[in-house]
Amino acid sequence: MECVFGLVGKGFALVVADSSAVHSILVHKSNEDKIMILDSHKLMGASGEAGDRAQFTEYIQKNVALYQFRNGIPLTTAAAANFTRGELASALRKVLTSA
Image 1 (cartoon, one colour):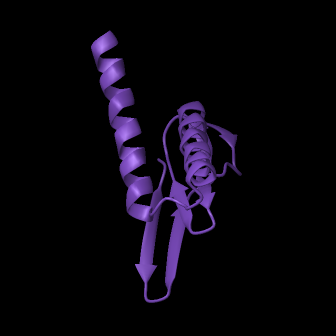
Image 2 (cartoon, rainbow, N blue to C red; image 1 turned 90 degrees about the horizontal axis):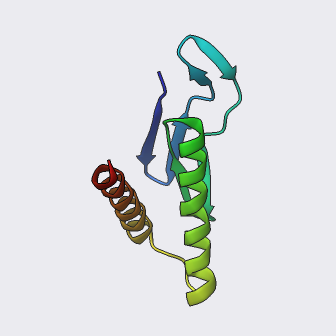
């Protein structure tokens, strides 16, 4: 079972994720990084299938960097969350309509 969670307190934020990559009863890796650094002030923790998780988090990371490169200002936390939610929703709808 995978676990990712975050806590926010006065003056700090804590993001925690387990580091194991398992499939059924087999442990593939015990040092998998499931927390992606989006920019200097944003982190994203993700769980799920290893390939899907890595591709999606890297896609979000690169698009957040692209936005900052094109516009000269970083995305706000709310804007980054909204972008991530929108991309995930459109990907899920695309899969459901093509099945």
